[in-house]
Structure formats: structure tokens, C-alpha cells
Length: 281
Image (cartoon, rainbow, N blue to C red; front, top):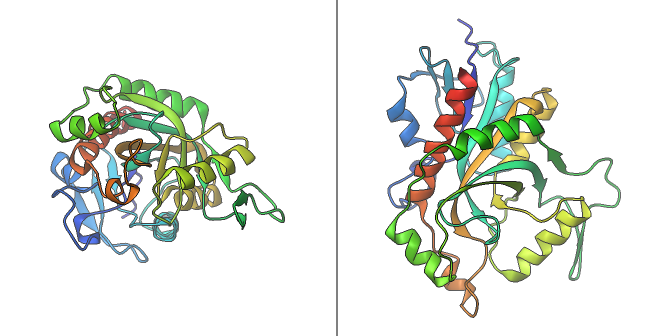
């Protein structure tokens, strides 16, 4: 039987993907509790694809990293039991963030995706590959970005004591909110002012004015969606679990391990479910 969901939700990780449990939270669990999903297996996808007929919503974890995300999305499009020609596709997960883009727990809807890994590095100079046939960045549909951000802004986002304590180290008194901005994707986990400056230089070379979030899957997802002519149906929504640099005057080695997984996964779910419901309607 062929299924044609209105929306396919694409979280990345479950706790099974980690050697240690990150605050007993992941990007999938809340979705499983909110929908009446049926399970099915698809060749090339290591985790079950789930579908709720009443909501007309499907979900599949992509796995961590660009290669896993590209392979999972391509396998879903190639499978005979899924018909995705009119399906909206929504990445919902967590991310690091530039401190100017939003605070811990904030939700960011991406308006573009930049691939951090495909570049040229000569000593301390970072630039796009000079022999490339195209830029390794993707602009997302303006109308869909605006619609998703508008829906997310009506959502009551959570906050937590641990997030407030982490913000205090950055002299940040903001509460979680919703923003729009570019996301930078890379298989490298990086943290600190030096790496952040390199990322900003690469974004500028692509004509992208700074960046908002950092993550590990979305360039792979965008590549696969572009191959299947589905990039104009893609929403990218991530909640901030950590900042991409240490507080002023602090040790990056210490701050690199400071995350608010539970708050970020909660707000990604709250905003993500509202966006998914609007698209499914």
C-alpha cells in the first residue's frame, strides 16, 4: 500500500545514537507520544518510518551527520510505498547558535543552508572551492519560511532554570523566542571564536550575512531534496541547545560541553508540531 503523507518530519537522533544519554531527551520521543504512529520498514533506512493516518503525518529519524541524512531522505523518495511528490518536509531538531541569533531554548527557522565542509582552507584563509560549478548553499522558499516562522511565533515556548543559569554566564537575560536566519551544516563539531570567525567568512563569501544556527544534517537533507525537486517544500526548524563559543574570558574546553538538551528538544517539538499541524491542514 502506498502512503502519501501531507508532512514528513525529519528529526535526526534518538538516545540510541549516543554512547551516553543526553539528559534523557532526544529529537524523536515527544513525537512518538503525540501521534498514533504505525511502523514500517524501508530499505536503506535503518530506523522505522512511522505514519499516523488520522493526522496524515509521517516521521523518520535521519541519523546523525550529512551522509546519513542524505541517504535516509533519498531512500524515502525512492521507496515504492511512499509517495512524496506533494509532501512538505520538515527538519525538527536542536542546534548550536551564534549568541546574536537567539538564546538558549529559542527556535530558529532557517532561510538558507550552508555546507561548512566543502571549502578551501589555506593556512588561516577559508573560502569556497574555486573550481566548484555551484555554491554549496541552498536558499529556502521565502513564503514557506515566513509561514513557518509566523506559526512558531504563536507557540508558548518553555524555559528552564538550567537554561537561565547557562545564559547568566553570557550576561544574557533573554527568554526563548523565534527567529529566522541561515543554518550552517558540518560533520565537524566545533566551538569557539576562531572557528566561528572562519564560518562567518565562508558565509560571507556565499553572500550570506552571518549565520544563526549550527548543526550536522541539513546540507545532506537539502542535497537530497534538491535532487528530487522538493527543496521548495522544505522547512528547517531547530531549537538552540547551546552557544557556539565560550562566554567572554572563559575556557572553550569547559563551555564546549554545556548544553540544554531537554529544553531545546521540548521547544523544537512545541514549535515543530504547530508548524506540522498547519502544513498538514
